[in-house]
Image: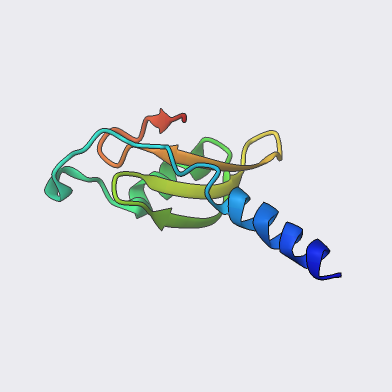
Length: 85
């Protein structure tokens, strides 16, 4: 039982770091657009936002895309371009 719990914790912690390599271009904070503006843009494009987080260089978005797929996506906070890892 202990081995199963340890394996589960390892898998969950690995998933949490799955996108640890995503780096948006670095912009001064004063050039960042607001996350509210990004949310409005994505909702206009048909996304359903579950939550948004701030990384050191990106906006991280947990949402459903227009096709209803649950996704985690990263966006450049200045240009709102989607950043892939």
